[in-house]
Structures are given as structure tokens and as C-alpha cells.
Image (cartoon, rainbow, N blue to C red):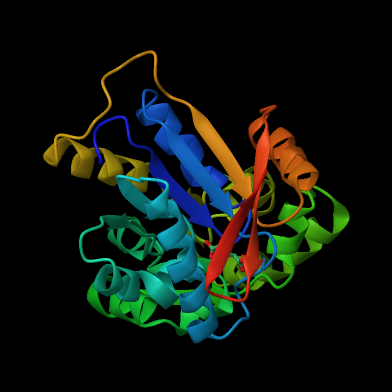
Length: 276
Ligand code: DGL
């Protein structure tokens, strides 16, 4: 039975969705959370959309079996590839997904030029095309896939040479075109905001959609009368399909959190088995 104590399920290809978990936590501290990072398959970004859809379906089923009252697809790539499919497959469940925050950028740009950083799969998906068509028809967009950046962030390299090189080569051509906003279209990227700001300077606004996603989760739970009001609540379970100790180190580097990590391992593409 789903009730207010049931957890909010959150998933990503790896540790990137922790940037969304952080916002959900800050806004809804009483909520129990389950985070699943598919580190056995990270990165998703260059994979075929059909494969990402299959992984997402299996992870969503796994989180729903853990009694999640809502599932946050804290991954732009999985949202692009699978959000519609998830809503059609699990009709009783509620999903919140990510989409590149092109709308707020288009509304506020003064130069009419905006940079978007996301994965190849996100740029290929119908969701991005529809966001651009609806909100950015009179804005010039400059896109970059920041090849290798997700892996560097997974390794905990938030300021090192390679991370700096990738960001510099993504941002420099956009800055030369006079962009005044950068949209973070991948949930891993908020963890390198300090470096992005250092490279782009303070005239460029960096837009992270995670706070808006947390607000949307709150709105939906309020509307369904499923907000957890118990201040004694607020547990978080972290689960990875990769190595527990590697994810523990992600938690330390990215959130400054020490926590137990559980594992759930893949059997084919359509089953996740929890190990003790
Ligand atoms: N965090 C991801 C996103 O928001 C996935 C990146 C990847 O696995 O390539 O798109």
C-alpha cells in the first residue's frame, strides 16, 4: 500500500541524479528516499535510445516494487529516451522527469544566445526538439555534448585538468558567440558549476533545473495528499548496480555524505536482483 511514508524513488545512470536528490532533500526533508544509480551502465549518453528505454523500464519497475509513491527520472538522457514509455507502461505510477531548462534561459537572455550542455541521446530525443520548438524559436542555441565529462564526474574529478579541458573546449566557442546563459542538460553537470562559472565568468547565468524538479515533486505529492509530515522520517537508501565502495566515494565527493550503500545487480536487461 502506498501512503505518505512510502519513499520517493530517484534514479540516474550513475551519481549525477544526486544533484536532484540534494534539492528534493532540501525541500522535503521528511520524505523517505531511495536512490538508484545504474553505475554498471554509466554513461547512458552515447547508447541507443531503445537500450536506455529498456534499462529505465527495469529500474522503474524495481523502484515501484520498493513501494515508491513517485519516481523521479533524475537523468535527462533517460527522460529523453524513456519518460513517455514509462508513463505508458506503468499507468498507475507517477513520474517526474528532466528536460533541458531552455525555457527560462530563452525568457531571460539579452543577447538571444544560449548554450546547452547535454548528452548525445538527450539532443537526439523528441523531448529536446519539442522544448526547442515551443520555447526557443527566436533564440540561437549552441550545443555541446561535453564528451567524457560524465565519466570524469563519476571519478570525482570536479576540478582537475581533464574536466577543465572538456569544459573549456565546450564553452569557449559559445562564449565567443556571446551567450549569456548556459543550460545544464545533464544531472551530472551541477557538480562542476564552480568550474563552469570560473570559465564563463559572472555575466553568464548557469541554469540547473533540479530545484524546479524538486518543486514539481512537492506539488504532485501535495495534490495527491501524500506528503510525509512526520519529522522523524526522512531516511535515504542508496543503491548502485556497480561497486558499493565506489558509490560511497561518490557520496563523499559530491554530497559530503557518509552512508551505507546497497547493491542490486543486473540479470540480463530486464531484472535487477538485490544482493545482501
Ligand atoms: N546524468 C545524466 C543525464 O542527466 C546521464 C549522463 C550519462 O549517463 O551519459 O543526462
